[in-house]
Length: 170
Image (cartoon, rainbow, N blue to C red; front, side):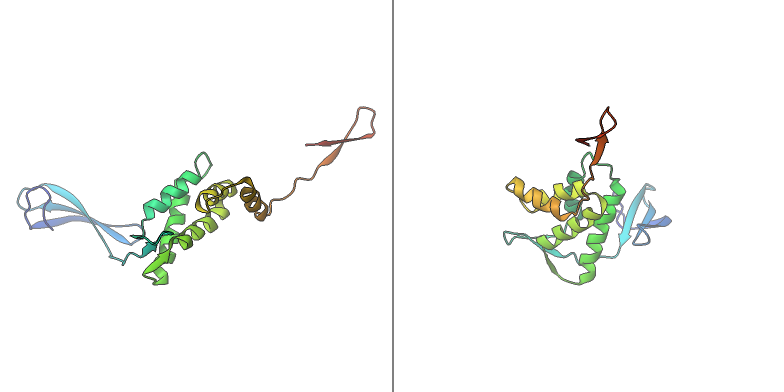
């Protein structure tokens, strides 16, 4: 490994640790020429799939882009960053495991929506509204209806005279 300080190619490894559940190794090194220390990371190089955008452009899958989209949808929602990172890990793993060299951006968005729906319905609707490019309130209503929300049951309230009133407790 080339020293980032002096460019020497001789070093010794002081410490190695497994990170990211064994998917990578962090190594602490010391240059044998200048004695300065630096850290390197080693991981298996996986062929990064290419995402085909709506307009036909192609770009390498970027997990950071997916995480940013999920984060925006979950803004001011009680969802931990670790949960969103877990969703991105799941999406990335599914894409890589599929073995496909290219994946349609619509498929990536559908996977994100599917996972968000399990975590938070408000975040799901937010993400879907941007992803599916909603243009009117009717599209919001349609997606909310498909969530299968439970209708709140209204109970009759008693009037001061002890008989039931026609009003409802809301």
